[in-house]
Length: 370
Image (tube, rainbow, N blue to C red):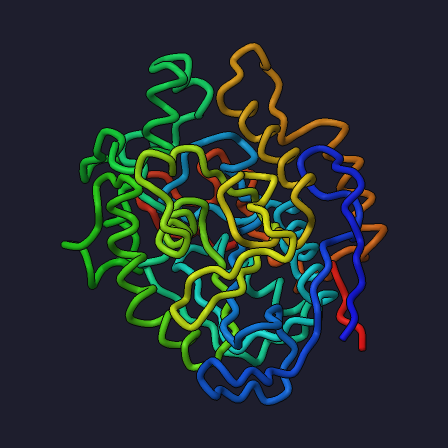
């Protein structure tokens, strides 16, 4: 069994510039100590057990670009978000991993990321399960507000607590809020379950239930699973998997569109990384960033400045560096077809493609080697 190691070299703007990614390995499962699960010759990330899991946050949406609190608002991907999703798919395709199923939210930024990733990997045929329990946390009265403006109003410490702590929910919405999810027809059968605001603890209760009842049994049966979601619903599941203490989870952030690969034991607990260390990017995780720790660390530092550094007045999601990254990525993987772009004609609207007040969508890279 051999592997190829390529390291990420440079980041332009906020994304990975090259197609260089971490080393993974190919194998046929032959362990005699774990449960006898047949992998049907599938390639996988895990050389020790058949239990494999990849997390992926969606690509850039219109409100990510505009630095606004999103929550359950159904903002579409931008053109850069489409490109980010395609690059993530290319990373996974070059790794050789094959998934058995995908789990994602009811929000189109995650659904379209899922579709684009599966198109890049050539796996459009596998089941995709959608559930509201994997929606982003509801940011309550903050939804639609500019994050940096809220930092100026409430202070860094309070906004960080609302965004990243375990049990401090933002102020709640009411039903008159222009982005109240109850106005969206997709939730018409669950009006009583719609939260008006959520902490990470609240998010973990609903996401954790779906994990224990649906995702965990699939992984234990030998399926290789991809979860495409949002920063906070993914953080809540990672907290469960890694057993991160309540008072430390505030320090965990996740980048957009960089796959995070876990090798799990039979109890679905992380197997230590091959280097015996926690990831360099966050310092918390027994997992591999398919893109490299250093690149992710650079992206997270930039994202932190975008929200909290009030001395920076320009939008770091825009500008010449982002344009350079976009052109280089299109050169590397090709411009997307209209089907690939799948971009809303209304994505440039202030409300991110949602009809204001109604909440209704408007029409209009490692390689395994023998």
